[in-house]
Length: 396
Ligand SMILES: Cc1ncc(COP(=O)(O)O)c(C=O)c1O
Image 1 (cartoon, rainbow, N blue to C red):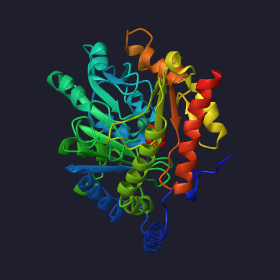
Image 2: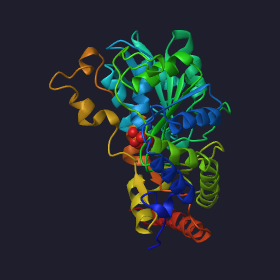
Image 3: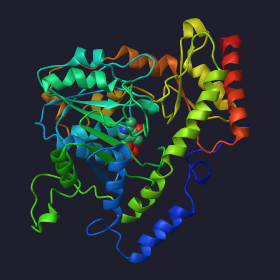
């Protein structure tokens, strides 16, 4: 079995001496929190510039920054937010905490992302926002979704936790097309501080509200000790920001190296019934393969099992079940036994056949890593080619 670098430790992360000295710089200063500090403010300025946005706001986690984004929209309990069922729970939990009702729309059968058509199908009188997830680093048609939503005054938040430097179908940077774009610095992401999050927006009011939300609604810059609305403490600290600033300088090379590996894989593993990502704007947080069992002769479980046997990490379906089939939604495990805010909706149980098929039958995600050596690239390409041929021949 080949031993590959993974995101679990230093072998598969680009954390080096610059991060070490950034941590020491802050530690020795003795000023570790963001209030009156220099690092988080600088990170926000640098991240805004990196995405070409007017404003950026940092938070302690990606889920926290998504929560801040949703809170900044200032919606009413019972208002609906459309989202895909194939995503991390971080796309969902902030909305629930704000009293919003998630409405799950189906996804494209290959990309796993929402489409303008699937969003249109679920729009209702109370739809106020859409959470567009750029899954695995592949772009959703966010331009199409924004064009659908804008005439109705529906806000669009982009979840780019898996999508640094992803290009949208319209050629924009993912995260800059909707009203707010949200990024994560969690351990497994393209760049990491262990945990952390950043959002970007061109809307000064949204930025202000999001920033206040991460600090208990406290407008410290006015000198007044007051709390303007319900906010939490999601402040990022200075140590995290100092590391994030160094990591940001590396994200372009991380994405470039992942793209080169993905290209080698995609060229090598073409086979009937096997669809690989092909759009150049993909940033490959994971490498998704979609198999059509009827043509290929095998399903996602068989392929994932074979790939895993070679030492290369693979998952059948990415999730064990769609987000809506987890107890938090299916059994309304939210606030005590109240079921709130899900009780505010009279929509029936969600059902997204394309998403269920991806998870249950067709999708395999393969772990890809920027620190693969040429030998790792050669071995992984060979292993994928072998696994697909083997799966097709044994029809297990
Ligand atoms: C698509 C997506 N959204 C949200 C999150 C939540 O980010 P975090 O783990 O930083 O809270 C993640 C990752 O965990 C994610 O992959």
